[in-house]
Amino acid sequence: MTKQTKGLERGLEYEEEAFEPTGDIVDTDAGRQIVIVRDFPQSPRVVWDYITDLRDLELWCGNLLKVADREHVYELHSWDKEDSIEITVVECTAPSFLHIRSDYGQGIQREIRVFISSDGHGGSFLEFHHNVESCCNLAGTIGPEWEFKLDRLMIALNGGNVTNVCLENYLPHQQSHYSISN
Image 1 (spheres, rainbow, N blue to C red):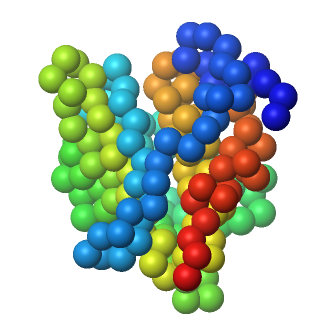
Image 2: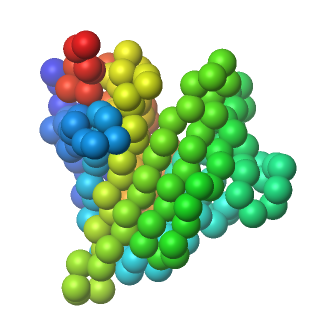
């Protein structure tokens, strides 16, 4: 592969190696899950706000429209506004735990859990879980998409331009890492 210098704005330009997968497929009591961990220099409260506040969420994850009951159901549109996903907040304990269920239509639901904890030095750890038990055939795409979005979260938290990282830096070369053989 050729080295790429466009991408993550973490203070330096990164080469292709920065886009290698950081997560794994983990077998749990709740089924197989994609688990990705990120550490941030920001506090858990700041990271929490970026994953729960609509304006901050739109910076790195997509265009959100609030729908249905104002507390728990949202509709997320991709940046090109061609796809939409209904998101239901199942459980929420600020600023440490968020459990959402997303409905992709046709009976496909996905469970996502986000755990945020302090690193003891003013920063935080984020542990992201996406249950892929019901959609194992899609894990090879889901994993790289979340790597991409979580890197965009890091850029947004650092005040950078999230458009400098693109999905093509993750797909297709991370696809085999996250693919599940049945």
